[in-house]
Length: 110
Image (cartoon, rainbow, N blue to C red; front, side, top):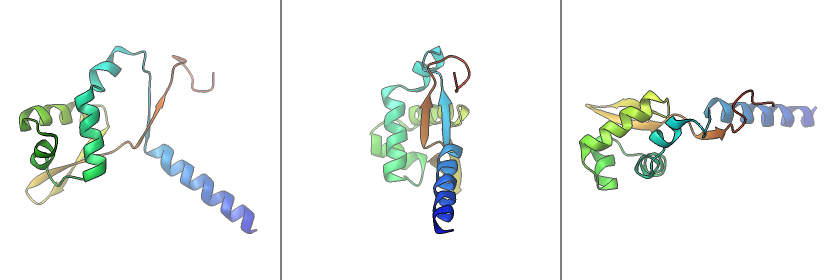
């Protein structure tokens, strides 16, 4: 019974991870538009430092707030980042914690 319970917990943890994952086709042209060095830096900084606002994030990465906001909007449009209300500020939060690369161009199980 304990083994079955542990297996259930393991499967549930995997499902939680997959619910926070996104599947990307890196052969798609959009991939290189979305995942630039500066945008990946934003994602990492949000995950590591959890800045309380877009302004705090722009200060941390030493970039203009307008450019950071534009990048965050694009990441939001691709369901990678979301914004949570934090007082009067919008706090950027990484929505997808895992990225699965699909090189097959079709079904995942091919």
